[in-house]
Length: 504
Image 1: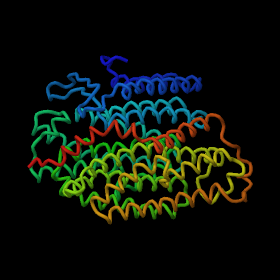
Image 2: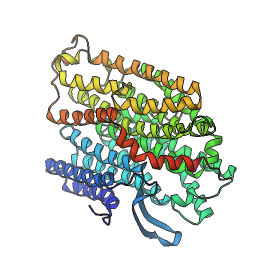
Image 3: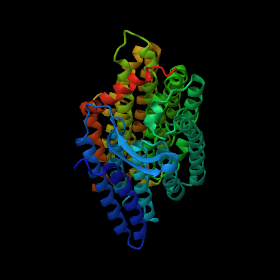
Image 4: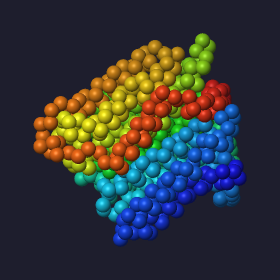
């Protein structure tokens, strides 16, 4: 694909238009809407691959840039571009969406065309969030994400779906209002809506702290960081499997991405002043939420809390930069921390998607998520059990799986900041192994004691394809993380250099 193709616009608008077509195909012929959704999602994924193949990893500047006037009166542009941070996340989004469409193939019988359409629109909007370089465009895409997810949880969710979807909506919406105020303030200061213009904007410390807090409220809810995490277990438990996969694999990453694109480069001094606060919240998420996961009876709740704990590693990796930069002996550690956070985001995208899909497979058969309703699944579903154990090991951070790489990089970087950070982060690996393996022991292993479990069928070809694809990615990234690390190396190094220079 040549460079003059508007490739980013294509992979944003193709799924959105495809979603509207799927919706228009109606439920009279559900297979038509399913095949159309699958075709659109695969086409979007294939069209996103040139971002990787044509990406120049030797430069930190934006690539595949598209720019057109949108609202000229306020200097708002339709401005898209990617760098080494956003590009892997876009490909992760297009990849996971294909699997979500396949996973909901037979399961969703009620309004399948609306279900598929919601996910396709969601995909386009999320790619838009990662690719937007105009802050107003970013904000529009950011808010637009709420609608499809609101419908997905509210229509196909569990018995408490209305409560969960309203809570999810209000939490996210409240945070983003503060972000909008900060963006408008910076527009009046700089005369531009471009995110890259904000990066160069000179701001006093007081301004920076207020802007930083505004961004923090928006991004912390999305990640979600402790104590604004409570919407996530509710949303996960009530959401259908596909909804859980998208929330865990992509939506949480948008919060982490926001820190790298907005908080750190726009307000570096405030980030330096308040890094202790973010590190504290990250370590609470990593340690405390790990223990909360230990006592869960609902499998989805356990994996939801595990996601919060794993995302704590991401924010820890991003904000230890300043402590490492202040230490002249620890050169290179700062870049390692941010890279570790990024690798953890991508890896968690694969692992959490796989874990939720595994729970989805059991739920489709028995309509229960309680750990106590299972036991001895390996005896009747050996192939399923093999995949589940692999993903559980990856979730616990076993070397050779992708879960190990990101966490290991963050722990090494944490050592260069403070021994106790690294110690607490490493303890969590043990707690993580505790709750993950305990769940596996109770669900998968042992004797079959329940009649309902004895009648279970092993995974069919469709389910096997989805799980095998994710297993391949988890092992590939675990054994060979170099392509991912190399792609973002220059961008991350540039970001670290940028944020360690004071604006005051």
